[in-house]
Length: 313
Image (tube, rainbow, N blue to C red; front, side, top):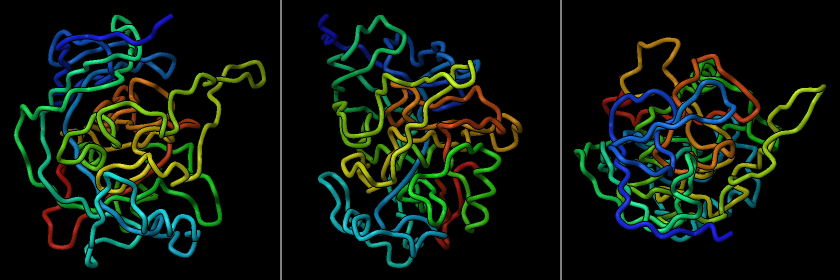
C-alpha cells in the first residue's frame, strides 16, 4: 500500500500554553491544537505545543564525563554536520555543554505538504513540511544545554529509568538543572523553527520509527531497551549542534508555567517510543513527576553567567 499522501494546506498550529497530554503529533489537525490518545504509555494524550529553547556546540559529554570522551566523539564535536552552527562559547558554558542564544518563537504554524502515512490516522507522520511560520512572538533566550544525553562515567549507553524527580537531582549534582520545555524546543528547532532538528523532511537519521517496541518478560509485555550510544548518529543533530533531540531516550523537561504544579510539572520530549513525537514541538504531559521507565533519560541545562535564568523561573 502506498503510504505517501499529498495534502494541501493542512495546517498545524503549535500553540504556546499548557495542554493536557501529548501535544503535537503529525496527526491531521482541524484547530490550533490536536489532541489524540497516546497508545500504551499510561493515560497520555498527544497535542501540539510550542514554547521552549535550546543549544549550540561544544566538544565533550557531561560535567561528570569530561575524561570519558572518546576520540570519535571528540571528532564528531569538532566536525559539525551540515546545518549545525559551530559556536564559540568563550567560556560561557562548560565544555560538555552548548550555548544556545537567539530569538525563540512562542507559537509556530507548521504545514505538512507530504505525508508518510494516511493523515486520517491518529499518529500519521509527516514526510515533508512547508517552512514554518511564527504566529506568536519572538523572545530572546540565552542558556547552556548538554550536547548529549547524560551518561554515567564508565558506561557506554546513556542513563535510563529516570524521572523528572531523579533527573532533577542528577542535574543539580552537576550544578545544572532540567531544561525548561521552551529551552528544549529551541535547542531542537533553532530560529528557523524546524519541525525536525535536521530540517523539514523526515529522515531515518535518528533512533526512531521502531517497529519492535515490545517484548515479553515473565509473562508481561514490556518496552524493549532501544538505547544507543550518545553521538552514535552524527546526523541526528540540531542547528545548534545538540544530538539525539529526536529519538533515543525520552527527556523530562519543566513544562511552561508548571513550576509549582507538583506532581505534574513534567513534559517528556524526544524518544524512540512514539513516532508522532519524533519532532521538536510535541510533548507528553500526562505523566507525573515520578514516572520512570526504560525509555526515560536525562539531559540538563544551565544558566549563562549573568543571564536572567530559565524561562520558567
